[in-house]
Image 1 (cartoon, rainbow, N blue to C red):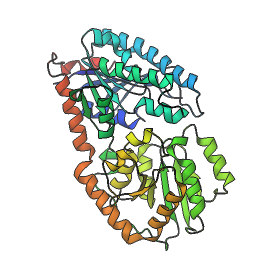
Image 2 (image 1 turned 180 degrees about the horizontal axis):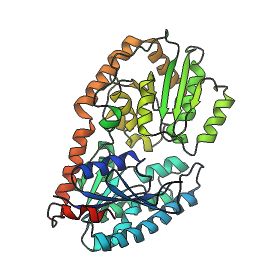
Image 3 (image 1 turned 60 degrees about the horizontal axis):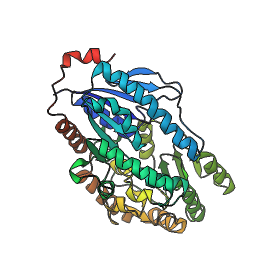
Image 4 (image 1 turned 60 degrees about the vertical axis):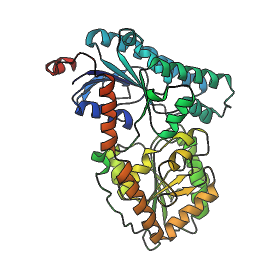
Length: 412
């Protein structure tokens, strides 16, 4: 059965991996999908991307500088208002059967108010727990009035939605503790696309030894303080003499970039750290295959306890060992025999693990083999994609079927 779906996200399409994966899954299942998102510099206001009709809202571009609390909230409010009017107009013309809204912010779900009043089904795709994100980003306590307001908005957004998607079991339990009925929450994990990161690990027998010309440590993702790159540099500073051929490849962009580059100069790590900026996922896959080990140095904060980084699966898919912080969400998926763990925020702990990976290739091969085995048996996008499509189709199974002959007219 074909249905008409609108996807709303405060992000860039198709560069947002979760939004892209799920949108493409819906299109592959035969549904008609429109995407309403941010408009980046040089991007078209309206275009068709791999079968999705994309509407990019003017006036908001990528933020490379650290935003204050007021600007942070203003950007969300501004986009939510634009999305409300855009979605309302499109709904009157296209009569969507389902609207999927990706947080953050949670309040973005109210951009679908008119369709909701008309009986349209609403999914809130809960990427991140917004109270924990805000606490970690701005270092405020859980009792702060703004956090209480954000939690209230989260509860209202969940109540407004017909169904909520959580990214892992930790987030699912958190949402339930905050009052969401268990039957309303479904888990759809963030897992890499096999088409980009390979259907099979590229190399399960890496030559991670001191005899190589270089030992390549890799990070890719958003350049923010809470992602722990400052701690990563401190750890590298501690092991640079013990790993004389160390190279740290960094990919991404974000509001901590200037501080990161200043730290590189201050610590005299210019010959070790190589910054490449933002690159597409296909290029990231190539870079991973040229690395020795992936690093996810997330700092110690409440937010990271609920996050399962997609990047660790990307490294494992391509046959590379991974160093990760010891957090609840990661431990829900892997154990000490399948990944290398360090204590969050502890540069000494990370330095010790870095040297262990460098100096013990036999141990690396054993840990990597178990990590890949767990990935293959439990965490593949093909299975997760089908679960997602099934959840969507169950939600809309009683609607009047959409005539596929109208699909061309829909993409206008």
